Length: 189
Image (tube, rainbow, N blue to C red; front, side, top):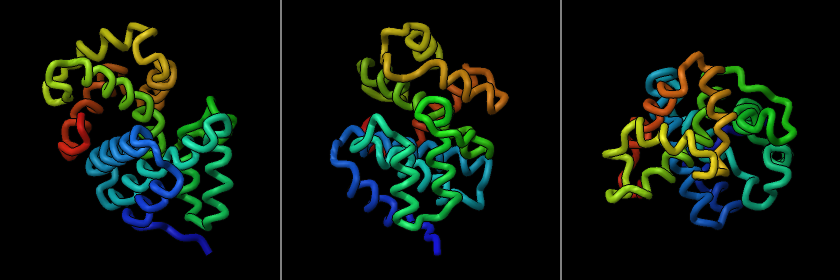
């Protein structure tokens, strides 16, 4: 029988498989961003969206070369809910060997914002405030157009995610900045 973890159970799983502060912080940021978007797009399922955000990179620290592939196996072994498994691994579509395309709005938002939160965070920490609170679209766009800046954040995936959602890249960036501003100040961005 499959199990949908609570937010606290999901956080415990995250900490069981991830030890590096960077990965834990990324999971918390993506979780918060997903929760923010859920309030607009699926208000009855905010907790599910935040859990998906927390667990989307569950396997990445231990198995970066098999990311999402190992995650699917691990989550199945843990008998986690199939909708959770599908949602978390779909963000690896087209780049990790996973053939599960993001279909729902939630899956598309995860796909689009996972890389983007990293890029926005990298821009933010370069600012005197080290914060997204005073970050503007034009600053992110400038760095977005500079491939060497935060090179690990795929512009192709960000653009593909925006297209999946029927949004312009600028709209996706602007909405994600606003979502990141809504996070707990302890998130440190």
